Length: 533
Image (cartoon, rainbow, N blue to C red; front, side):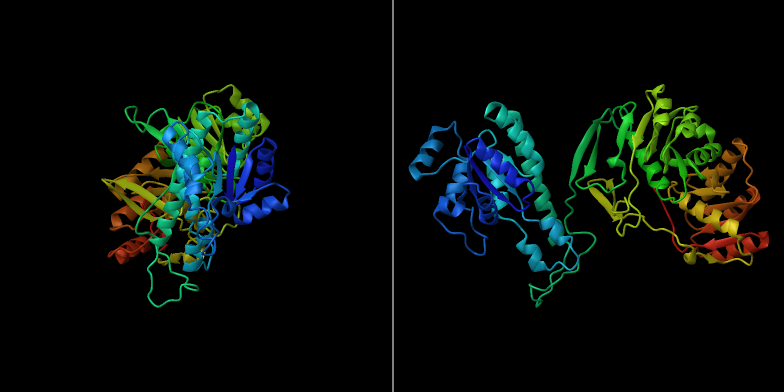
């Protein structure tokens, strides 16, 4: 058996090659990999010796040769193929180990020049990988160090690799080539080339939206059905999921997650992890129906549940603190579909053992202090499918800071009202438009979502508060977009609101400001809206 090894990432390669050699496998290699194996005392034949042709053009040409690709592509079950190998003195290559030049990590570095990017486009590696993967019945192709143990285990067990393993390796290889080519296309089509710039120090400006989008995702699992039972569905994840994102969660117990479970769970998790204080978010049909902060998981859940106990029935609950025994006992009293938290104490897990259908999801919060959306556990882009196309936009990752808020009324909000306004604004960001959110004391008091009229959203929020037995007197109100007329302001003030936060920007802003002054309430403008469709 002959193995050709040519890797950029040399993680685990010496140990793997040593194990192959111990099983009598002949080692072939190129450049730096060959030198490494030789230094480790392993007998290795350089590809240049095999092809009788030296590496040239600074290593750009070394494996693009019939003695390499003939050995990879020849079908062992076709006599004419084997006769051609014999005629030209070509040995078969039975195992190919290749990982590619680090193009993705190179272009991700600040200050990467166009020349650096181009030089990290692998040519020979993908060509060999495609050849080996095409001939998967006879050749095993490894493109990641994580594949080494399975290959060694089968070789040690039976001296050969199963068809199933070779096929799965080939699929992984073609997937890797697609990812690699997609990354190159994304990069090159995101820049405008400038004539007259020296290529060796030219750092091109990259556009957010490339000329061709090549998003690559890997399937996590098939789902029982989609949004409705007549639809089919599956969950896919980014190649490198952001830390603290929904797809990184671990299901500890409960039934299989459904399409709607995952969609609602994502809405709840994105909202709850935006709070620094202990917080709880309860979501029903993609909208928060209760949000609160407290001193611990129990208090934040208890307050969130009070907002709308009816809607919370069968909802999705997310907390940004460990669920302990007391919190678990309180939550277990209601019907809950999914419960998410950074962790669960043994006492909490014991409580839910009696409720085997409740889905418990453990998700680590993203690390504090991340500078990019990815490191903060957020999507950088938001994509929505439309007829034969995609709408792409940067994700709504805007976080309102107190200095950004502008008081536009004669009455200034109190410190307590300021905190409630900021809380209400944070919640409104995750409520479907048109959104109206009443808050007080670090909890939602009434939520109106998804109505065609902002007036209707305000009225619904008031009705829900009344149904829950909550008083809206002295509440803060957030509106995700501006009030186009004073009637929306009058409705929330009539309900009991004393302070309002809204983007501003309407042609009738002054009319609404005058109304707020007339009613003696405080109003602040954010200068940014949070439409969520």
